[in-house]
Amino acid sequence: MSRLIIESSDVAADWKFAVVLKAKLPAGVAINAATHTALGLAAKAAAEHPELAAKMSFLNFLDADGGTHAPISGLSLVVLEGRAAGLRRFRAEASAAGLLVNDFVSAMTGDTYAEQLERVAALPEAELEYYAVAAFGRRDELDPLTKKFSLWK
Image 1: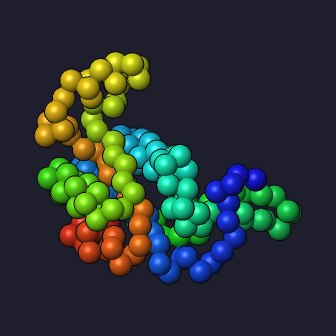
Image 2 (image 1 turned 30 degrees about the horizontal axis):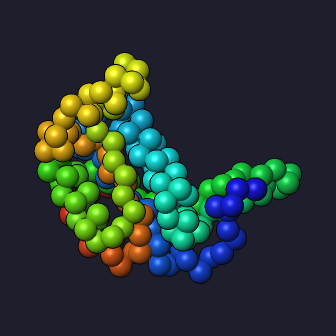
């Protein structure tokens, strides 16, 4: 089992994940951006912030046949949507609050990853078009930053 797996329910009330997607993205693009961003957030925690990775409350769900469905976080993960300026602001505010943050921009789509890396490197931050921003942190710090967004549809 991964070192990220912890069997604890006491963190669920205090910690959560949030993914904010750019409104009106096609469903396939939105799912791709959300998935890449969330995977990156977990990898970032494991590599750079193991104390936060331990708070992500990954559980092993067992079915009636003894099959394992793990790791799945026992924490809340809300998927929201907002306008481009809102995603940029959310990223900046979450970072300033010291929350774990990851993002996905339009230049990360299409072609090969090498070409994507080149496209992102050629753009200043102000010109990046955010498709997704994910954050992990204490509920009382994250909720005020996400209250202006609507649930993703």
